[in-house]
Length: 437
Image (cartoon, rainbow, N blue to C red):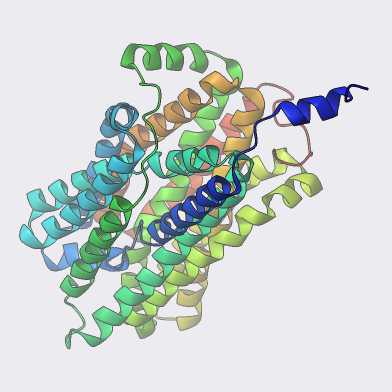
């Protein structure tokens, strides 16, 4: 009697030899181990909590600081499409080697040319490096799993890599604080933290060179990309999300770049805010505080729905900056009020930890698969382009009118922009409380 259909098909399927299967799994384990090590060292920014102080020591005003940081966002904007096209042509591994080397070059430029043009050049290199690293690690992870027939593990493994990136950055912040505290007697020399950052970036490049490179992806053509952007942004849902993301991105980025000036000002009431080791610990704890909120997001969506979250993230940022502004203006040397203002840093990590997964979920559920990458690229390009100009204008305002004025301007302007964008959304766009895909 002939075998049944299912059994017959099973018998006809070729079976890989056990030794070949074991070799594939062994290669996968080694590749994943190296990807995890690379993730831990992708952004080892030991010097970042102190860069504002380094710039100030070399005579930069707060307005110039805003221009220097603005150059970083302009560079990211300009490099997003060309680096994506280059990654499509040469594959992700080469970009994962180049990205950390560009980071190291940017940080070393801060030391080699400690003047305004050198700082702008350094930030341009750092912006290019971030654009280079924005996609290849996830692409190589997917290709690695796909070769082993385990692409269903992508979300779990990418979540692990994301957590390792945050952990590595947090530990680097703490390392930077320790270096600044114990290696420099005057506690105002930040060069050791910059050298350590560049060295760790170089180690990341060496790790990337040991990876097994995946095949080049389908090449992105610039005209096709621009046509895709033009087509998608005309859709009401995408046009609305574009406006919302520009507002939220600005509200997330300005306080981050203002943490250093805020701590410097609050240090008059609380000397601990001038202690480099404490500052490194503070930045590390903030980085780690954001991580759990991404994991909690599916439960929050199921419990309260998407609309309160889309309203809540920008308004929480606006409210926290209003408290920071009040504490800065009314502190009068009070340690309690100074601590109240700094505690808002941690409140701001809630939307920081949630925002990207929520926006990706929005795109995944409403945009066709072939154009999702185009939409996410358009969001990234628009947000960086707009924020580059805003950052320069806001820090110029801060230089002219003071820290509290700049914070309250962002708080009130951001709240008004949030209300306008959300009231103008297409009806029914944020309905639903089911789990995220």
